[in-house]
Amino acid sequence: MKCPICGEISFIEWCKVETYSILKCRVCGIGVTAPFPAKEDLIELNKGVYDVEQRIRVYLSRQDDFKKRYEGYIRNIKKLEGSGKLLDIGCNIGFFMKAAQQAGFDVKGVELNEGCAAYGREKFHLDIYSKCIEDIGFSDKTFDIITLFDVLEHVPDMHGFLVEVRRILKNNGLLILQSPNFNSLMAELTKSKWHWLTPPDHLYHFTPETMIRFLLSHGFAVKEIKTWEPARDFSNNLMAAYRINGLIGRALQRLLNLTGIIFVPILLLQRMWWKMKKGGLIEVYAIKTN
Image 1 (spheres, rainbow, N blue to C red):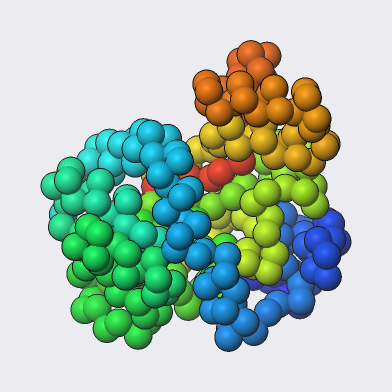
Image 2: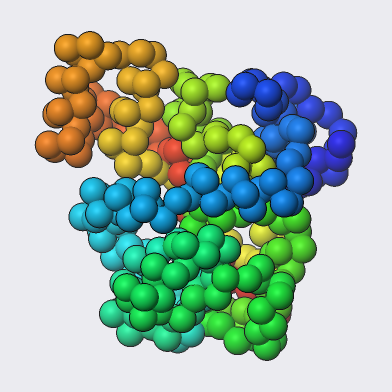
């Protein structure tokens, strides 16, 4: 197997999760799930993993967190692009689309999970397509902004996918991506129990360096890249991985649910490892070059 980023044929097994191996390229560092599932299996898997009722519960239980996150995205988008036509690919049940619409953007969405797409249409009256992006038939250079939040790691043909994304994005248009960070402290500490590994749902496991390399090879200039993770997710993952349960686990969980923060020493250190590109999530803002 050739590496999808650097083209070399040199992998090691980073860990195993049940019947799947996570292979790591020795040259560039990207992770790849093996064996690679069939496209039809991925569609069925998506229906189970991203059940609409479960998605609604997740968003409603953490709506304040998501609201702050979306406000941050929108501030950055306005700083780099202003406003315009925005396409949210992998829009889920439409919460970010709704926030962008309220902020003045002309929004459309793409969501392959029909249950989630239907919820966004019915609840928020959003314009959401339930087709692969290549099958919709958008005209060249339709959108000023395209967002890919937690999408790229799911796409079997990520090269063909990004070619299509580039085609429908205007020259100097803005592309925003978010993806789990394979080189994060969170991944290193929890290994096969890393919550955001999730094979075979996640096919590729990016690092900041491989994400930049991938975008550059497809005609994008990276304007900003950072790493971060919600404190609650970091601490919950550690407690699960190291089986911190019983009375101590319940007490810590209650503290997290009440405050949304982790232990003070970790909280103080967290921004240090973010600056070292060791946060659990990669967030990228890139411009389409002519």
